Length: 295
Length: 316
Image (cartoon, rainbow over all chains, first blue to last red; front, side, top):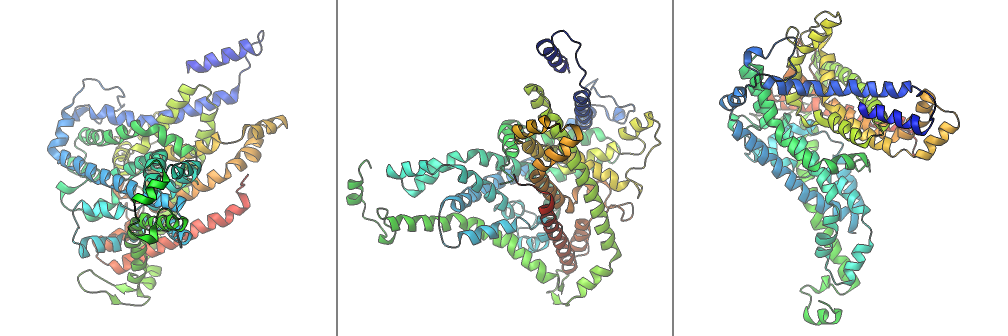
């Protein structure tokens, strides 16, 4: 807030030196709106963190206490007693990282082929890929369940959550856009130096498309880590659950007894996504803003 | 390596057809590479998306309880669907949720993006962007669990603060009148940051010359918003609205975790109906019919958006 005051001061001193500052009501309303939205956005997060550090007896206190006092971390250790936390967070990591890595491989290859290689049927096949983007995952979950669980016998294994997610039409589309933006000159120069087709792809195009890959990696990580619907359908053994299901179980076990433990679980399960986001947010926010998604 | 002459002498092409020193050979190499590179994606999409889509279509004409082979029943499932009051309710709930959620999302996200653009301090702008994006990092499950505590009728913070301004305790999650509103607000809270960033992208690419020209011509305030800013942003608005609608038509996590579809069927969505038919009653045929209905609705809504968009989207 202090910065606004400084700005207004600046404007009055440089622009209209000897007059009273003109009160820009619309600017003040804008900042008021931003502040209200900021409070509404952050309040639940602050409440979750603060309450996760309270003793169970205090967790429902009204008026709510926003600043954690008498820090009590026993809720955090209780999370480990109630659900197989390490197993479940490990499962989430295995599932998510496998899908991210697999998608990066399949989508980079296909994105490059659709952007830079010529072969009969290319346009038709690209349209097929685009069309599959329109099909919602949940509308086809029954055949996928039949295929994975009954035909392949992979139900209740981590494979069930990994294999169907390996291809990504969205990822192909996104990376194709990135490959298209790279000028042809690089390729021609490499050709003159005697580089073969694989070297042109792996040493020239691949590194230049890395911002697109970063965006895809972060979006996929976020979506897969937070997925609840697919594991709900495929998994039945708690030891094989990803952490999203663990959190909902935790809520079930604790009932309305100690919400502090449930909230501690939520905080713990969110830490990995926050770390990934902090590492890649520069790419993500810029990429989303630059309209890489709109094409 | 350094001279092309030595290369041709040294390496006799293993397959003459793909010789790297002729133009056709290179063209063929690139063609082969193209097919190899798209193969994993195409095979994967055919097995896990196109095939299942066709199989959904096939199953919707069959009765199948998993334990015995599917039996062809013609249009029975479709007839049942049209007379199923619960399915009707679930579609009604889903539409209400989509309308409330998407309209609130688009208006707030656009307002937020325009407001953030006015922040001239870069550091403050960065902090605001990051803060508004935070809820996107939480899972739908975590948000549903958290917000169901906040919406609690007696112990929830929301009712506590509403009480401060003289509003009686609202039975957010236990009353038919409020449950959809509560779930919608929950979803808006989690998704606003994402839609906001998309709009911020649109807002930051608006050409300054046009905005300045509009001001010179005397367009200010609402007039400027309606006649200049909104037309400039219309492609972004279309993109965000369509993707948000597709996402919200598949509502599941929040109502499933917060209310299990209750009270009664007041917050049961289409995907929840499909889930119940398929994985509680093991009626895969009927569940596929519901899925197909949902898919058709998504297609119709998307197509309608694009057709209507010709009237209002402006590609500069």
